[in-house]
Image (cartoon, rainbow, N blue to C red):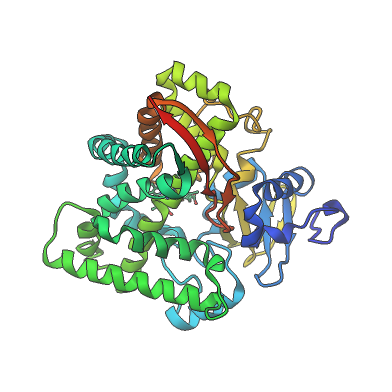
Length: 421
Ligand code: HEM
């Protein structure tokens, strides 16, 4: 069935909201749309007003198939759904519709060669070796929580900053630059929230990309002159087929690592803490069985599924769950929906820290799967394993709020009250 937005199958729901950043302020609304589509129209043609049309894929098996079949589904031309006006502006400004050219926007040998540059940094063995540094940073933020006197915004005061410091230290960015990078990456992912009367969407977006480019150009120059043991030095001095990375690819690589490496993990940590408050029996279980922290971290990541979508372009006419897709069309994969698909995940609406860790798709799958997965899981597990046993209690102290972004979203604010032992 190829029915679109107005299909009777979709009575009462509006699939075009899937690209509206503001709709992500209400995760229940988005989940309702995804649940409905998955059940009634798992491959649905969506024609939003300000975006080029796309097929929304919402079933686990379809998303796994798309991710595992790069010969039919290309990451290259349109990996993320952004408004058409921005695509045009990016094309004029950078010669590329996406504004950046990162691993997530590449296929084939170029993708493999670029991914290989930083591969070692994210291998489980090397991530495990970073445990000492992660411990120190986790302690810094637990101390911050302690110093805040029993109330804080766990998302804005703690969860945004901790994974940021971990990944920026790996890249080689100093603590005093953290607020700049946090601000720029949040603007990039949720540009619409920063629009004012003076600054329209394309101005916010363009200025953000330019500021990121200036920052990373300077850093790369510095590391070319004086390389040290960090990712910035690896990128600044990398060669692919005997050539250094061109400036656009180099800057894009930095932007990818600086962005992919923290908002996702922050959202999962904050959402994970909220899940423990919502499901106190799981909280008690975790305290009783400390061996469950790694599995709990992974379940929190499934539960939050902070990366809301990635898109692929159809390379040859094909079918997906019986629906005909034409070459050149876009298909967007809604990971949150895959992770709530009862055909693939048992009792998906249950937050269950003991569940099988291998199934969910929050990190994607196939050639583009998230290289940062081991780091993200470790960061969350370490933080909670240190924090929770030190607390006499922790409870929600106000209404939560969510990041308005259709790309990476999660808690923006989680007021909590707590007491350390
Ligand atoms: C790609 C999710 C943390 C670096 C991705 C993708 C997803 C994802 C869904 C695309 C996968 C695909 O298309 O198959 C997450 C989640 C995280 C997280 C949920 C935290 C809970 C991190 C961290 C880093 C990182 C800590 C490290 C800096 C990357 C990179 C890519 C990527 C470099 C691009 C890979 C490629 O296209 O080849 N991530 N990520 N991510 N992630 Fe993560």
